[in-house]
Length: 275
Picture 1 (cartoon, rainbow, N blue to C red):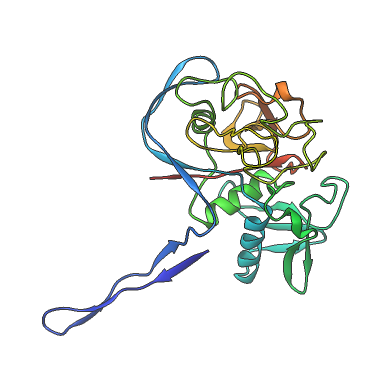
Picture 2: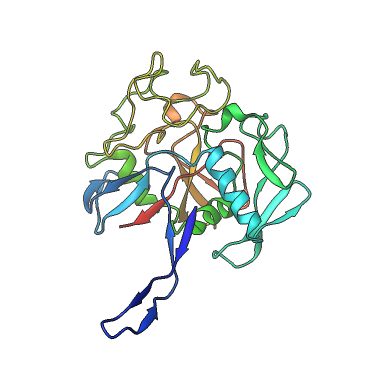
């Protein structure tokens, strides 16, 4: 969450003054990695430079983290609930847009689904708290990011974190396997569905530490991740592949596109922020 502070002080002559209010984001559960400026090999096999430093979330946003956002936003009166839709305004176009649906449905297979009870959003199955949030639209992803003073990554920002400077096909190298990522029929304990974020870390049974060169996890498989990039047809680009895709469809080269209102059961996101 965040807190708002206001400084109160006294000068050398005993005059009391107050500073303006400043909102500070309390980074208590979201973990970030620092990405330095510089050249890397993009998905088009071209040298591309990002001229600034930035941060990227180590993991995709989880069910638990998104529930914190929904409950804070609801308490602050910035959400609208209509039927099974959770809606709000975002800066993209200023209109009331769907963020995510709640309640069990075939689109989420109950995995990581959320519901609304006693004026509070909760997980329908608490064992999925540490899995990535799914079914979130681009508007819902952007709303989370903006609420905590962050943003969705650009396509190049995402690719640099996933590919490293040398431009790997997968975040860890040029081959994939069931001990590396969550793909269709990968044989993980949650087949067919999401795995907890960071599951492929070499500590869980039969997994290999599969972070990207900069230290990000789940950049291949688990969920497709929204970026802020729009193509010529007005669709937004997602990267990374998901648990519904075959292993070879999870390279750092592959892109998926969707309209911003689409919140599918294999769509998630992670955030970036400026340094």
